[in-house]
Structure formats: structure tokens, C-alpha cells
Length: 317
Image (cartoon, rainbow, N blue to C red; front, top):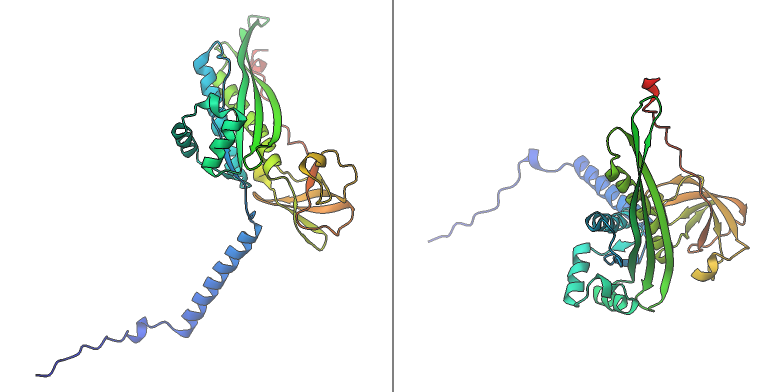
């Protein structure tokens, strides 16, 4: 008895790829690979892994619940700002909290450098960030306006934060800084919306803290030089703006001596800003710059001033 062997049916001619279709697919694939390669070349290599430990409040404020909300929001805003900078790799908050619990540490213990280094090694982080909210407060002031215009309520908010960034490998404190900011919100008639000022103040403080952290673990440096155009490894997400000026320093300088350096190799002015990188032109000095040369901020272009708020009393006069 003969066995019949089924042969695979050939594709109909209409379903077979033509030479033109294959060419289009190859071009698209090549374009995708080239785009990935171009973008990968712009991404930082060997980025630092940063663990932001829970912020500590050593002294409870009069309004403990409000203060705790501010501290929690500030901690979250710092993490979000670091992630958005696309300069460092930030460990996920829940993972950090879980490791601290497993190590039997609360926020007070983790704020000690030795314990922070131990937690950082378990987390396989390069740096740990410690924050102590030294002061959180709110003051109020009421002023009776003339001509029966009502009462103007003002709420003043202030926050002070002590920041430390610890190198896990060396146990060295890479940066120790104190940031203190305040904001005010005013309203006529009803009570001033303190939450608006709190959000503003938290965002501003988080930005300042994130800039300090990034300067410590991933300082601005020359990424490449092409025909006099210098590309920097930091961009708009890290706070770089068009018009900022940087000094390019010798690559041999240590982190501690960069701020004191007086003889830069060149001065740069930023002309283009992307989220993860920036382009600058050489305004003075040599154009023979090497990739990796550190940079120090000389002058920051001030942000555009917001439009003045409308006077709520205008319609009363």
C-alpha cells in the first residue's frame, strides 16, 4: 500500500513578497537600527545607580500630619525629578523600602552614614541620598484692606532640608548641602489656598535638591566635539538652558577642586538643549577639547519671568 506524502502548498503569487517590498523592508529595518544606534550613542554609559532613602523629620512640627504630607511629597518629587533628568538610574521607591524593612532599618537608622552604606550595598547602589527635613512651617497674616475691600489672608510656607549624598564604595560623603526655601500665597475674602503654595514650594525644593544630587554623581562633562560644536552630557531635563555658560576644566581635576579652578580650558555658551544632552559653542579658549572633560557652571540664564498676576482689587476702584 503506497503512502501519500503531502507536499507543502506554495504561496500564491499574490502573497509572495516582491523585490520592491523586500527592499522597502530592508530600508525600514536599517533606519530603525540606525536610529537606535544614534540614540544609544547619546545615552550616558555606565550611569550611576542612586537610591533615595526616606527623608527624616527629627522634630515633629505643630501640624504633624501636614508636615508629613510635605515630607512625603518632597521625597517623591525628588525621585521624579531625578528620573525625568535621564542622567542617573534611580532605584524604585518600593524596592528601597522593602530592603530597609528586611534589614531592620527605619528612616532614622538609615539616615546614619554607616547604615546607609550598608543598605546601599544590599541595594547594589552606587550612591545613597539622605535627606533630613530640618524645618517645615507655615505662618499666617491677615490685613484689613482700605475702603471695605475685605481682608487679605497671607500664608507663608518655609522648608529647610539637609542633604547628603554618600558614595557606597568609598563611604565618602560626596556632597553635603542645606537648602532653604519659602513661598507665600495670598487671597482676599476666603482663606489662602495653602495647598497651592505647598505644591509650588515642594517642586522648587525638589528641583534644587535634584540638581545637587546630579552635580555630585554625574557632573556636567564634554561628550563630544565636532567642528567647534561641543556636546554636553546633560540637557533640559537636568536644568540646562539655552544661554547657560560653562567653563571646561582639565580632566585631571578632582570633584573637590573643580569649584576652585581658575584657569579653564575654554568657556562655552549653550545654544541648543534636548532633554538628555545640550550643544554649546566655544566663546573663548581652545577648541581642542577632549570627551570627558568636566565642566563648571559659570552663569545661568535666568528663566523668563511669569506674567504679573491680575490685581483682584482692580475691579473695585
